[in-house]
Length: 253
Image 1 (cartoon, rainbow, N blue to C red):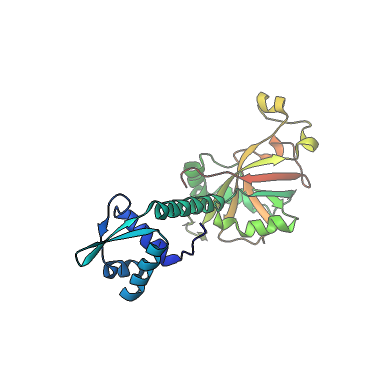
Image 2 (spheres, one colour; image 1 turned 90 degrees about the horizontal axis):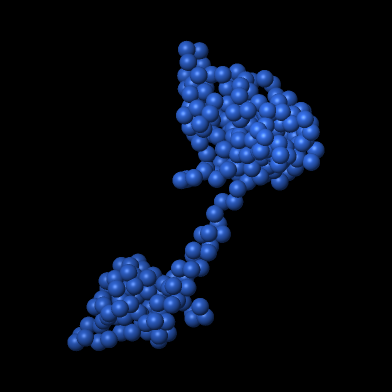
């Protein structure tokens, strides 16, 4: 695309193609096109002249009016633009986030909140499982993972509504489905409660979800994780062990 083409040239070419001016000349005035590019009729007439001089359109006089046809070269330029836009959009798709952190003790609040019926019913319905009572607390020690946690709201999530009981109001929770993996080389000893196939592969991948809470005392260095499993027992992990957790792609979102 080596021609000197600006935004208004593109708009007019795209509109002309949309109304069929690639196959046959279309009768259209600069006044009509001025509404498409939101510029004066004089400016639009100048743009049409520039397109014609660049061999991107043909203008055929019909009595006192003109018919306009997009040339093959004009069509190819819009096709090239379409391909460039597609590549840009594909490259801009959100990449799945990976976090690494160290297991630490929590304040014991997780088991209380996970036991509340107002949350449990929604987890079962929306995640497909009731989480093990309690959350796994992961300390993110590298800045790159803390920065990524700040951006987690840009990723698709499963929304758990807040609710009220007779005593208090409980806030919403956003769940980010993920796969948790211990550092395999270090933690493949004494694996418990894992099916035979995983044992043979000596690899543990546990379904889980990262939680983002409306109300929390934690900063971006701490991540709370739920799972249908007791993660520590299932993977024989303890405080201080390092795990990796990767967001899963939510289908249809």
